[in-house]
Length: 81
Length: 122
Length: 249
Image 1 (cartoon, rainbow over the protein chains, first blue to last red):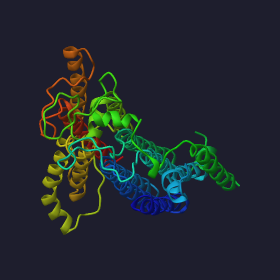
Image 2 (tube, rainbow over the protein chains, first blue to last red):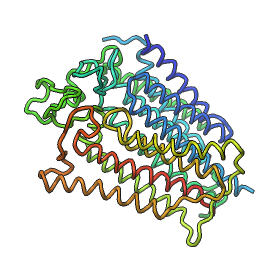
Image 3 (cartoon, rainbow over the protein chains, first blue to last red):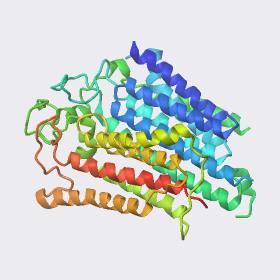
Image 4 (cartoon, rainbow over the protein chains, first blue to last red):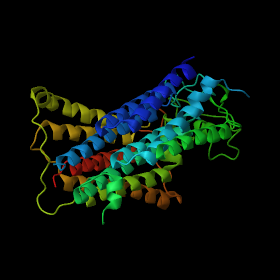
């Protein structure tokens, strides 16, 4: 009952977070929703018994990518004036 | 063989829908940073689908430990996990390069809007 | 108008691809490992004459003469059986880091972006946390063949430590020249190990060191050595990307 019951709930949450990331107007909120999708994807990888991939996705997909996007937003806003 | 709809959503239609949401974002958005976000969302969908092909019911992680000393037929498939490991690292390399390009475009032309860039004299 | 077309494309592709893939696929509860290539990699019988029916002689804690005696099967695939793909991936990361450096390069003295002044908790706790983070990252990439982990995960954790240094004080600049030298030497080291395998056994990237006991720290041939080099390379690379993004125009 763990799979597919619980993992279908998490997949629906990832689908919802990515839909909100694409549709929202402000760019900062979109970056935060994408980071949420990355963390939930890492949880799904743990549920599907793939620990190596879960660690890689949490460190790189949800950690480093969010830093890159926030740094890009900072450098763009700085010259917006 | 028939799958019930919960298992079909969780292993096939769910990751496919996440990939197509990313494709939809790539088609309709004009801001360059949101296009980069859509490319990352496509990566999430593809990685989820590849790992879902390797799930074996009541399986174990494919690591030999003190508790699991011999080969069991209920290990999850290690080959898709190795392929997805490479794919995640390549996605972060592409994201770093694309964002550096976007920062330089904004520094040179002053905007990150695709329609305004299309009308300008480059 | 564009959104309506994109929405129709979304729904159409969802049903078209989904029903096309649904036919012969065994998902979830019907899935078994028999007849797949992953089973051969798990039993470590890839190089035998009939890999599908050769019985497995894998035993944890014993010294056997099978190929690739690493306890973590995903590591033995990534660095052992499909090591050429990992060499390509390391090359792609190197190209991306060089491209970022080429885009952000300014001749002369580098200045860094001034962030907000760190408050009391950040500046005190970063001095305490920094050696623990680096130690944990080094643990993850040296034990890549025993537990989940490996070079890429450990390298990212160490790059997060460099980011913490950047945020904890406004005067820190990472030594970019030293990081480039470390990255280049580690990547060349991976290639030299492959060439050493070519000279000693006749196959490129062959596992030529003794395999040892499964589960010990010094086991599985060249796999710990390669993951050590990959861990150093990825940490230097991602720290270089962090220092490039933090530079000022």
